[in-house]
Image 1: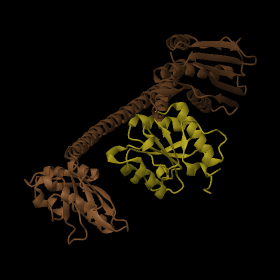
Image 2: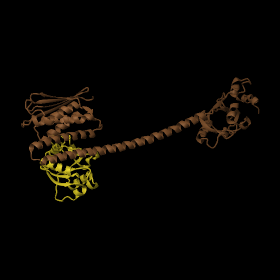
Image 3: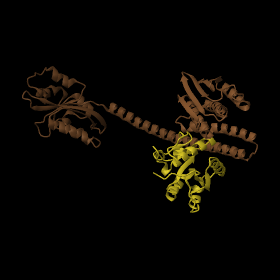
Image 4: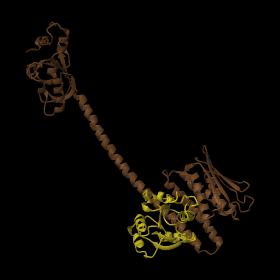
Length: 150
Length: 366
């Protein structure tokens, strides 16, 4: 059983569309969390400062410089073993059934409502499981993530 | 030996029969080529052949009598089929096979050979009787059919391959377009949200937020359509449930409960966007007004299907209808009335004391 995290969560945003990254950053902060880093490719993630400690990462699948979110997920899970990885993608079908070690997916196009509902549910799931909110339609949890509290 | 002496030979078949034996006469005169062989003699030679056999093979009687039947075989005769005949002779059983045989002039014919042992009263095999039938036309017809079948199958496989490749290309294109539409919708939402943040006037921000909710509703419609297996149908019931949970969830109001009883209501995809926008106006209006004074409550969503008629009810136990601001006004009101007309829907506001109830009814198919 992983130790429970405390809100506000430290969030990493891995997204190569600048506008979407800005928008997500604003929404993450609206939801009461902290964005501690942004990256547009796997290389950016690898170059992040060593003292960063993300609790939660939102990861797009198609990234800059020919890299992809599945590799980013593997890297994050290795470097920050307790970090929660949520894919944010317009192509959820590209995610393997085991979520490649990730914890869930928010399909694009996301809405403000959908993203904030998803964030609340994830926060409840990692800080004070089980979540009191029902799983929102905007978020599909990986089976392994659900198994943490069921 | 002359043809008119045939009857002498048939006497060998059964000495009990006289010269006028009708069976022997029939064998001599039939149009069916026939031979009789004698297994008691070395190499089972032919001891009788009728006129039809000579006509079929092109050999004269004296070229036939005394030889084993294999003299009809040639380079392209199937050795396996010949082996079956040999095995049947050894086993003293009958056999029917099609053999490619050769005439005296070297031309070939397909011979439907039927061979059977002839036994005496003691049950011993004394002769083999063989009838032949020229089935060249039948075998050639079968071969042509088989060749045509192979050709047709090859053609079908090639066409199927082409169609599969075309379908794959179309699917790839559809995925690509879907991906772009989604990214653009996400981008439109992000642009509007970023703009809304930078405007200090709360009245304008509120309007931009309302615009955003509409764009979000469009995005949700698109996402649900392309996540499903069938992009031509859209489940409005599931969409309504999805919408309410997103709207309530984002409001952060843990004191608003959601109660849903949803039937699947599949409409043609052309109706997805107008219905999605109408439901969005109703749902966001309900959240904004029913519980605006901070009271707790429940939003109830019912979706039911009766034949071709769908009914979606969104009700609350909030402030109720007498409130001046309980119904959408301005563009929201216009959107609902114009879009409702487009999909032949009726939208009815009623007092549900406590609270209000909005009933959306529409035909699933026109």
